[in-house]
Image (cartoon, rainbow, N blue to C red; front, side, top):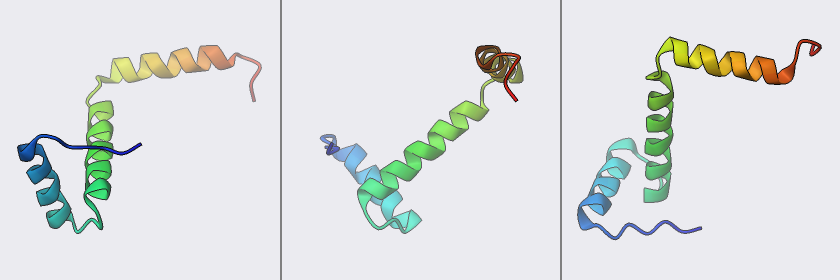
Length: 66
């Protein structure tokens, strides 16, 4: 699915990130930036929220799992 950036300012930012990061394409630069932001947001969750998600996953797996 193609990504079309229709805002000139956003397109300029994407090109600037591409140039600064040495990414091969604007798409690669946008992908890397979005992945970094996703990871940053995950890490910004308070430990109690991360622990709650881990406990819910463990409960879903069940006690009999190895």
